[in-house]
Length: 197
Image 1 (tube, one colour):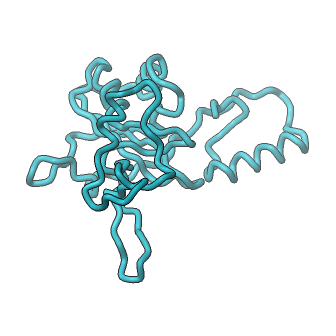
Image 2 (spheres, one colour):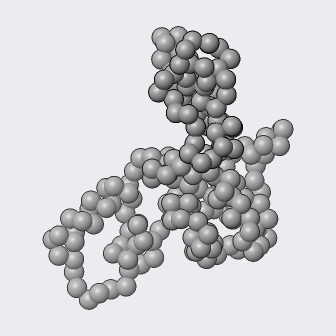
Image 3 (cartoon, rainbow, N blue to C red):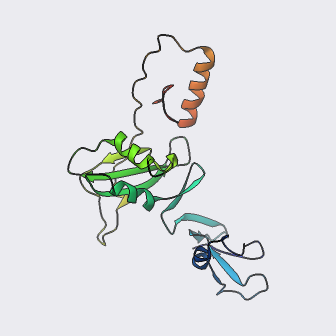
């Protein structure tokens, strides 16, 4: 885990002593002035032979989605409350337009109404915590020691947007340009004028 020490490290979390206690500790590697404490970043890294530090992943299930820090277990907890869901795992996968997107895999005995599930999540969490894609599967694949085997999860394609109701007129030049920009940014064409971005 990457630990940070030095004068630039803050004294702790404002009005959150329990979080400060978890993230800060006395520096076990150095007693130099200004370096007495270390901050646990939660980032797992490795030191390369050339001296560079390579980011490997997160210690916890926290990821950055559209600039917001998201705890994937929070999304899982909400999905588990939805009627009929017997098991779930939530991952962060590379989005076609760059960055990360939340993808959920759910297990249920009956067919899951994905739009209704998304509305349920949205009733409890902000929009950036609603999965970009959700796939119903027969069972969550596990490793021999009982952890989720993320390599065996099937790939998920972005959902298709429902066909837009015809407005009876063609798009003007500005609307076409905006549409093309949005398609380029999102990395796919499954959008319409009524798509919730």
